[in-house]
Amino acid sequence: MLSLSIIVLIFIICIILILRSAIWGINKTIKECVEKRHREAESIINTRRAPKDWTYPFEKRIVKLERRSARSEKISKIQKRAREICFQKIDRLTDYFKTSTLVNDEETRELLLEELQKVRALWQGKNWKEIINY
Image (cartoon, rainbow, N blue to C red):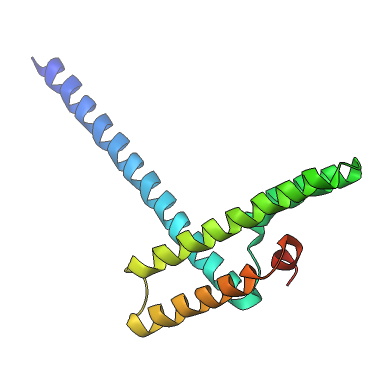
């Protein structure tokens, strides 16, 4: 009877440790995602360019194609897709800040949203290279 109680106790302790570890991991992941969004917004507002995280995969593919002397249509297609993705991401970032509770106050939220919308409008009239090298 005593050995069964010890086994159950050890099992409960293991479950509790596993759950605590899972909660810690989830909290860490959420914190990283929130920090990343705030860094992206800060980078966009300060530089008026898309963050490197958004553009690097496309830049890498474009450079690779340019080295191989690929057709310009293929490169243009990738640039067009990259531009579309940048617009999707800035729209998602704007939507995030519309509802985020992690903004100091409404005045800050309005300023942040206004700046993101200005940058989006600025990008609207530019091609891919101009968006990344503004």
